[in-house]
Image 1 (cartoon, rainbow, N blue to C red):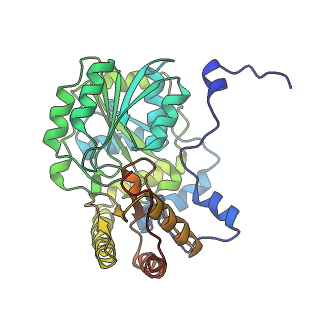
Image 2: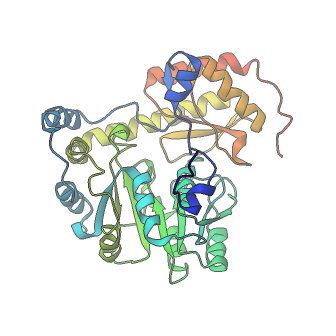
Length: 373
């Protein structure tokens, strides 16, 4: 076979994917899941106003989306009281991460993140040849002091922090996040992933400030707005950084229907409030179920709950056993977080299927020879 003209970075990368999608598992199983509770999507769906706007926009599918996304950016600027020049849209937070890393990471560039955090970030770092420096969690939260020390030790131009956190659902207060950002090295960007911020207590979310050139706030329409399949996200940052991103971003990556739907979703605050309330109710349901089974729910400010089931082997067994019951969930991938399962909050019927299946399989769950290792 003729050798392909790949870059050394890509040639030497192992084949990998950050996640195995539920569709791939369904194909392997030969049947669909009855409850899809593993990808932190919103089973509550988009706003009715967003659905109506997107249905109407289908007829315009022959048109490209606005490459500048100005309608959506203007709406977001008014929503957050920031300049439109301080906002960039992208294909969800994943797409924005890729674009941002494109501007600052070269082969050998150090990058700081948390061990066991969002794996798609690591995936993109590897694609650009960056060198990951991973800081362990502390007490099921991302370790701000550890991340800060790693940033100073490595001189990394990027530190990635998710608040509230995925996969554990925990959070830091806004004051602690602001102090962390101030103490980073002068040449370091903070990528603050706030995919779940709408579900968090107000004290966990810093005020939007586009005057700080070192902090990038990443938001998405995939979670509370229920539009994961449309792939719409946005970054809020200093206008100079947004201008730099415009040099390399894919200007057509956010489709026309997604932009129109996102604008309608943003305006429907009543639907957003309803989803936030429904998710809070679902988190309480999961905590009750977990405690009834002598498991330990981890306090969550997201649309999922991590449940400590006593060890990694038990967690893996439960993920597989629930799949056999046609319930899709996931588990964190790195110790000590992998002693947990992670369950997205869905509507009441999906939660009911999860509860029935979990109670059924939990009676047969083995001990965990790998617990606390």
